[in-house]
Image (cartoon, rainbow, N blue to C red; front, side, top):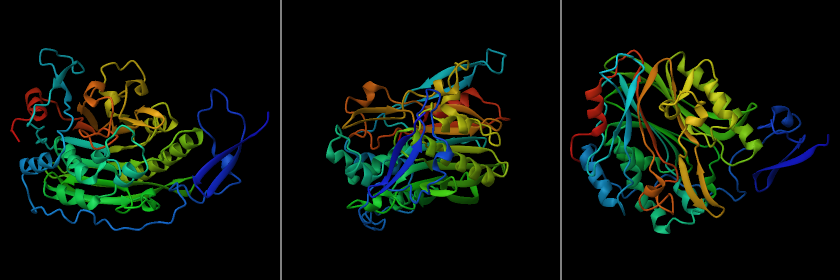
Length: 432
C-alpha cells in the first residue's frame, strides 16, 4: 500500500502537507494520527492579505427609541424592505383529545396570514428557539459569489431590517445567530423588543481581510429579559487536537422567572468547506464543543444550535447524537412522524439553497439539538418550497440570507400539551 500526499491550504501562504494512506469506501474521515508530525499553526481565515481592522460603526445612522412595540418595529422593518419577506408557517403537534394513547398525535398546519405574526409563547413551561446564519455582509458581498442574486439585494441598507423582521416575525424567546458582523445594529433593534444579547467574534475572522468590512463576524445569542433571568455565560474558541481553531461557541445559562427552571442554550458555527479532512476537523471541533457545553451545563438541560456546515451523513452529526452526557436529539428530525428511519434521514431536505459559480448548492447543515430527557418538541417552522424560493434561490430581494432560519417550540417534558392554547400561540391573533 502506498501513501498519498494531501495538501490543506489554511491561508494562501500556509499549506499543510499530510501523508495519508489510500482511502477505502468505509473511511469517511481522517484520523488524528495523520497529524502527529505536524502542528497546525492556524485554521482561520483563507487569505494572506493584511487585516483591514474596522470597528462596528456602519449603522451610526440608526436612531431608535429605547422601547418600541412589536408592531411598531415590524412596521419599520416592512417600510425599509425592498420586497415582502418569504412567508412561512409553523407545523405543530396537537394532542388528539379523542385518542387516549399519549403518544398518538395529529399534525396541525398553521398557515401564516399577511400582516399577522406568530404570538409569543406565554407559558413559562415552553421555550421558542430561533437559529439562523444571517450571512456576513462582508462575505456575502465580496466573497460568496451569489451569481443569481441582484447586487442591490445584498446591500446592507436593504438587508438589515429584513434580518430583524425575520427574527421578530416568530417572536422567539432565545435567538442564536452566526456570521454576525453588525452586532451593534442587531443589539440596538432587539433591545427595543426586550432582548439582551452577547457576541463572540472569531479570533481571525475572514471579514477582517476584506475591504469595507464592519469588523469580525462571530456568534451572537439573545434572550428575552421578561421571561428569563441571566445565570451565567461563557465563550470558547474551539480546539482541534488541543490547537485553537478559528471557530467559536457561546453559551448562556438562563432561569425561567416564573418557575425557577434553569437550562443552557448554546450557539456555534463550525468550519466550512468540503473534503475528508475538513469533515474530520468539524468532528474534532464538535467534540470540543460538546465537552465545553457539558461542562458549562453542569447537569442542566441543553439546547444546542448552530451552523455545523455538515450534512447529517458526516461524523459530527453522529457525534452530537451519541454524546452520552447530554442525550441530544435533532428537533426537526424528531418532529417527523416516521420514527422507524434513522434520524439523519428525517432531517429537512435543505437549510441552505443558493446558486454559485459552480451551480446550485442545496444542503442541510443547520440544526437545533435538544436534551430529550428534559424537552419535547411542540412545533417547528417549515421551510419554503422551491416554488416559494424562486429559481435564483437565496439570498434575494425576498430573503436576506443564504441560510433559512430554524425555529422550534419546546416544552418541558413533565408539562402536558394543551390543544387550544398551542393553536392560539401558533396562529397569532393580533394584527400587526
